[in-house]
Image (tube, rainbow, N blue to C red; front, side, top):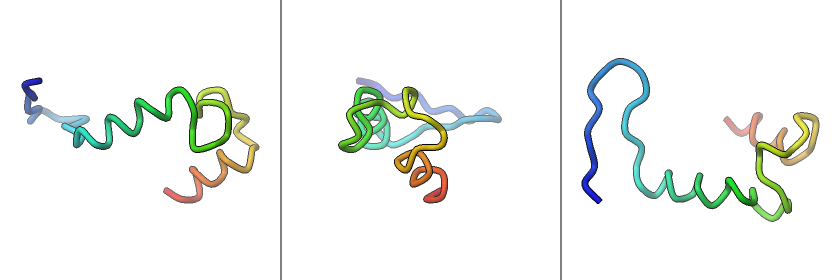
Length: 53
């Protein structure tokens, strides 16, 4: 895969490792049994994400 560099304003390139981790966690975040998109914003797992930022 050839990577394209984005030098414009806004989002820039992310390391491939970060993209792969995000790809895997789309299906299941950690060992929660669900993706982040399916979690309640009041759940313990989601709070760990938010407060860990």
